Length: 283
Image (cartoon, rainbow, N blue to C red; front, side, top):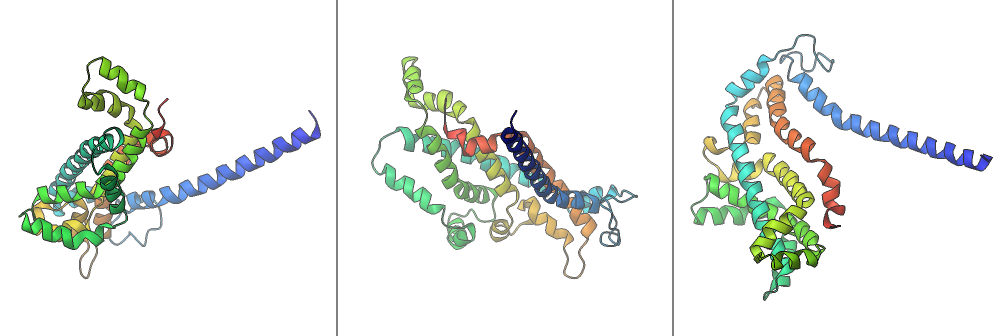
């Protein structure tokens, strides 16, 4: 082995070590707030900022019980679960049907309607609060879970349709022809061929929209007057008073709120890069 090869291998090894160290630093910066949050949830109100240890010596697990009971987290948590399941399910169903129609069917105004969906992606959610409020008020859906769910489905459709249409555009037509020979209708092809192949893209849609719905806060404050319908993020404001913030209970509540969405991300994270990049390529 000549000196040039040794020099090249040494340079590659050094580059790899530096890249790995950089990635470890980034990972530590991302994980540290979660560890601090969990440690603070096990402290007392007086020791949250006085005790600098990440995990205290005395663990106050009763903070979670107090956060769940005093903050009425049972109701808020159930509300968020219902909203997330309904909204994500509605987005997956409607966006997959619309994306398949935009990709595979021919009908008048197809490009116009598709570009209208793309244009809607440029409008931030706060920019649509006034028309959404007026629309829900006139439909008598304000201060109802149904109105809130419909608004959030509307918010998540544009990006979901775009991702799935990109996927369906590159789906081999031979698979559709084979399904037609077997007697499948257009809906049958969508259900039996398109959706199973679109699992990476669907996983991305599920993760992103679950995050958006679970963390939604402002729209709920605008549409809801009744505290019974509030989602979990609004419930966290229970521990933030005008003069005193119960940080230990707030951190316990945030930990409770983070766990479900973190589990979803862990189980489905392998599909994120695949769904955004190679997810549109069907072998």
